[in-house]
Image (cartoon, rainbow, N blue to C red):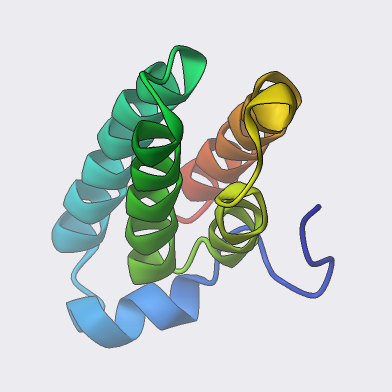
Length: 108
């Protein structure tokens, strides 16, 4: 589902926005991880297709903003998924979130 050419985390992308400020980088990455958990919770039991799409879209934007391009591309790919595909898609997004968080931790 994800684009293999998309990096889990493009630290240079985020550094352009933070001016290389490590504290700001860490804060933004923490906020993105918090947002990911909120979106995953919605994706676990979406009220309807609109809730599913909003969670995917929100996480996609948060991920793109910090340079987590593989996660953003995956969210883009599953945003229009139909209800029968939601459980599998959520597991893929959850896996990608975990991998992305590991890449964040290695960003120092």
